[in-house]
View 1 (spheres, each protein chain N blue to C red):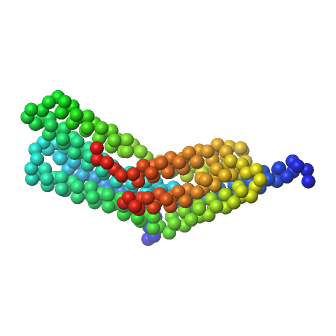
View 2: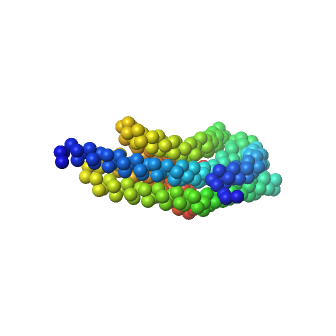
View 3: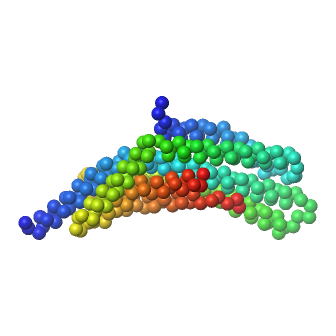
Length: 123
Length: 151
C-alpha cells in the first residue's frame, strides 16, 4: 500500500502513545525523587533513552513525509505557479496587488522547501 | 479602441490569470499544507521533549532543595521560580497548534478560489489573509527550527 501523509501521521501517533505513557511515569518518578544515587541514575538514564527514541520517531515521520512523491510534486507545482503569476503580474501594465500578492502566497512551495531544509539540518 | 475598453480587457486578463492559477494551486496547496503541518508537529514534539527534560530537572531540583538541611527561603524561592519558568515555557509550546494553522491556510485558499470564480471583489481581503497565514506558518517553522534550551 502506498504511504500517505495520513498513514505516516497515524503510525507516528501510535508509536508515540505507547512511549509517552512510560515517559510520563518515569518523569514523575524522577521529579519526586529527592535523593541522589544509583536508583535515580537508573531512572534518569532510562528517561533519556525514551526521550531519544521519541525524538527519533518524530524525525522518522518528517523524513517519510518529505520523501513522498506527491509532496515533492505538489511543492514543485506551487513553485511553478508562483513563477507564472509573477511573470503575469510583470506583463500587465497596472498589475494589482491581488495578482502580485497571490504570487507570493503561491510561493509557499518555495517557503516549504526552505522549511524542510531547516528541519533536516536541525533533526 | 476606446480607452475604457482597454482597461476592461486588462481587468479581465488579470482576473483570468488569478482564476487559473488559484484553481491549479488547489490540490498542491492541500498536499503541501498537510505535509507541512506534520513536519511542524514533529518539530514541536522534539522541542517539547527538550522542554520536558528541563521541567523535570527543575522540579526535582526544587524538591531536593525543599528537603535539604539548612534550606533558606531564598534558595527555595529561586528553585520554585525556576521550575515555574520551565513549566511556562513548556506550556507555551504545548498550546501551539501548527496543524490548525496549516489547515486554516488551506481553507482560506479554497475560499479564495470561490471568490475569484464569483468575482465578488472579496479576493483582495482573502489574499491578505493568506499572506498572514503563510507568514504565521513561516514563523512557526522558524521557531520550531531554533534550538531548544533546557531552562
